[in-house]
Amino acid sequence: MSMQTDFRALDKNFKSRVEASFANQPLMGFIGAKLAIIEPGFCEIHLPYRFELTQQHGFFHAGIIGTIADNCGGYAAFSLMPAESSVLTVEYKINLLSPGDGSLLIGRGKVKKAGKNLTICVVDVFVVKGGVEKLCATVQMTVMTMHEMMDKPVDTKA
Amino acid sequence: MSMQTDFRALDKNFKSRVEASFANQPLMGFIGAKLAIIEPGFCEIHLPYRFELTQQHGFFHAGIIGTIADNCGGYAAFSLMPAESSVLTVEYKINLLSPGDGSLLIGRGKVKKAGKNLTICVVDVFVVKGGVEKLCATVQMTVMTMHEMMDKPVDTKA
Amino acid sequence: MSMQTDFRALDKNFKSRVEASFANQPLMGFIGAKLAIIEPGFCEIHLPYRFELTQQHGFFHAGIIGTIADNCGGYAAFSLMPAESSVLTVEYKINLLSPGDGSLLIGRGKVKKAGKNLTICVVDVFVVKGGVEKLCATVQMTVMTMHEMMDKPVDTKA
Amino acid sequence: MSMQTDFRALDKNFKSRVEASFANQPLMGFIGAKLAIIEPGFCEIHLPYRFELTQQHGFFHAGIIGTIADNCGGYAAFSLMPAESSVLTVEYKINLLSPGDGSLLIGRGKVKKAGKNLTICVVDVFVVKGGVEKLCATVQMTVMTMHEMMDKPVDTKA
Image (cartoon, rainbow over all chains, first blue to last red; front, side):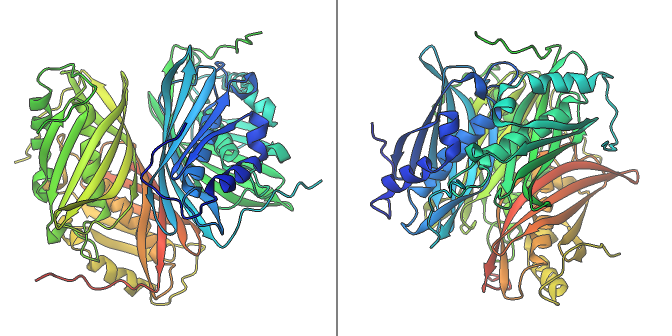
């Protein structure tokens, strides 16, 4: 599947760069999140239901929904950044619209404005139940380009 | 340790009610978070460093920082709610001020205004490194009281 | 001009109700704002440039951009509310994307989720220069329905 | 009156620099706002009630409350910036806690973290009625330092 966006990537290797960064986030493996789609200015992440990710009513925890949203927005922005750069979340604001009641979370982040230093993204997070997607959260966020500061592989502290 | 706040709890059993709700969030056990302090209108949560909770630079992931903040604010608000009620996060906005570089996260949430239906909280999250606390995130959030809708034990779906 | 939206108004007199509320906001007349379009779940407001509305660089002040956004979101939400209700802004978050450099501000607010008590809206504000619209701000907001509390005409305190 | 803050100004002429910028915002004169206090990392602005600044219930309009908050935060941040710089609001998030029902608005903005490029501020806005201050809004915002880009006098376009 491919998303059409109005953006062009500065770095032709943006996909492998984003994939490598995602793979280097131990949290993504820990919760079981998958990078599903990365296109210029767009990122989609999937997270299957696990009991360990829930709150007191058995639904996806708001913090987990925020985590997925943060990464969708961050990587949508990162896809447009120069090769020699790193991505930093400045801030995000999340509205929780419906309980995270379902078997899968799907986050879709889009760049709204890509500036030299700051990029603004919007992210919708959907929960899938019985094959039907329902909007469960919406996010507006600000991401910063850290120029000439490449993402490094995680020091495993081993 | 006890925090002095200007609020009085409506429900004299607020501590055990918050503790039970926290214990009923599987995510808290999964990431290793501890409810450290609960007072009327105040909640402090601790989360020790684990490799699994980090992002690509080896620091606490922004989503995890947001998760701790969400619970600090939510439970600060919940402490002031009537016995027969449940708590729902409407929205939060988080600014990430410093990398989550340290051995422990400490979140401290305070109620700023408790209304009949909506409660506004502010939360600061600190990261501890070498025994020194550093502010790493600040949050402003809106929480809703769900009247006559008690927190239920999680259905284990077993 | 008419906008197609997916929403249906509960109150068939929603247009005149919104128009009356807008007309009853002295601030709108003071700054010269016009209610341009009101449809179910959508509101567009126009504000021509005036020197008095600017900041130190001669552009529309961020606070004025926020004011237009607040009303676009508030009235988009109000259009869907029952006849016997009033509208209250709970909170909004605004990102300023470009300077408000132009001859006209156009705000367009849309309802994203209309709940019984809380409605979530997104608003884009554009600045028009030389006939070209440029996105200058984007807003995510939460609005509350005040049931059985009708908007009253302003007491003129005359 | 003087506020004690933990910050030190880089520019010993910060007061006159902030005062000049404030005086160069035509909107401040138009609505009748006064710069009451400026200290390193702190700014207080006063705005007396005027019928023209109200919404449909006769209270200060949320957009006006946001305008005062934006300037309090922006100038608290600007007080700490180098002499050769300008200030830009990146984003703000405002919670409206009580109606703006009173004879005077008082906004108080404080820097929470001053970085090289981004500064995070919190602002409380109070409404005074019968001599009593009541918290009516609270704001969290992000401000950018525009290095080597001095505030210019407004081009009057006359």
